[in-house]
Image (spheres, rainbow over the protein chains, first blue to last red):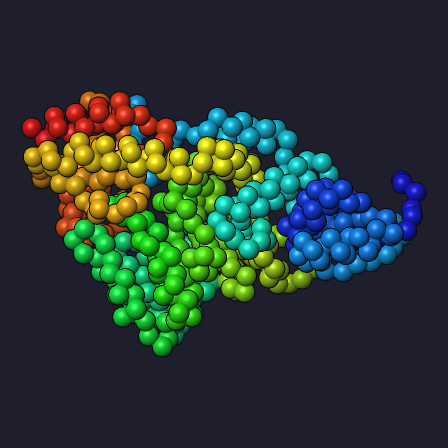
Length: 78
Length: 377
C-alpha cells in the first residue's frame, strides 16, 4: 500500500461536478487528482479531488471563480 | 442509394464520429463508477460533451445537461416530471407523438391540454398562444420545427410570451438541433429536448435535455447514480437526478466528435447548404402538374424538408417506387404527426417526405426531381 500522508479531500454532490473540477484544475495547472471518496469521509461511492493541504486556498478560489459547487472540504490522512 | 430520409436519422456522419465510437468501445470503463484510467476516460468524454452541448445551446452550465437515449425520452422526462394534475399546458397541432402521447397521458391524469390548430400551410398563429393562456397555465410544450412540413416556429417569440406570463417553455428540437441556431437563455427556454442522431450528426441512442437552473423535474427513473449509495432516494442534483443507470458513453463520445465537426464546419454553412438543396428540390417539383407540396415555403428559414404527394397515389407506393426504381430513400405515411396530417387533409394518403443533409448533392436533387416528374406523368 502507498504510505499515508495528510491530504486535502474535496467532495462533490455529483460525478459531473467532480469532472468539472478536474477539467478546471487541468486548465489552470492546479494541484491534485481524482480519487474514490475515502471510507473515512463517506461510505457511499463517488469521486473526490485529492490535493496537498497547502493547495486549499488556491483551490477554494478556483472553485469560486469557476462556480464549481463542492460538498465538503476535509483534511485526512490517507 | 440517394438518401433523403435525414429527418428520420442522418445516414452519413462525419468519419470522426465512427472513429470516436470505436476508440471508446476499446477503451472506456463506466463513467462515474470508478476512478481508474478506463472509468476516467469515459467520464472525461461525457463531461467534455456536456460542456460542448452547454456552449452549443447557450446553457448556463454543463451540469444542467442530462443525457438520454434521444428526444422521446427527454420529452417524457420533461413533460411527466413537470406537469401535475390541475396544471394547464399549451401545445400545437405541429407536434410529433413524442410530445402528444406524453401529454395525452398527463391529460388522463388530470392535466388540462390546449392544442393550437394550424392553418392549411401548417402554420400557427402567435396570437393564439396569448389567447390560450389561463391562470392555471403552467407550460408551453412546442416543437421548434415540424417533422412533416419543415415549418419552423419562432421560438424566440414564443419564449418571450412564456417569459411575460411566467410559463415554463419546453422545446422539442428534434428536427432543428445542429442546424438552426438555438440559444436557451436568449430564447427563454426552460427545458430543451434534443436528439443526437439527426442534425447533430451523432449516433442513434444519444440525446438529452438541458434544464434551466431552478427548474425542478421529478425523475422518471431512479437507480444507480455513482454517488450516495446508502440513500434510499435517488440524488436530486443535476444532472445525476435525471441520469439513473449507466450512460451511453460510447455514443456520447461519438456525439462529441460530431459537435466538433459542426463547430469546425460552421452551423451557418451547414444550414445554408441544406437550405439550398431543399430550395432547389422545391423549385423543381412545385409546378409539376399533379404534385402537391405541403408547408410554408415563404419562411426565411425552415427545416430542410419537402413533403409532397403525387396525384392521389398512396404515399407508401410512391416511396417504394422511388426506392426500387431510383434508389431514392424517402419516408411515406404519417410520420408520427397525426394532427399535422389531419390539418393538411392527408390522413388517408399520407405524404412522401424528402429530407436533406448537407452531405447530399445537387446531382441527387436533380435525379429526385426527374423521378417525381416521371411518376406524375
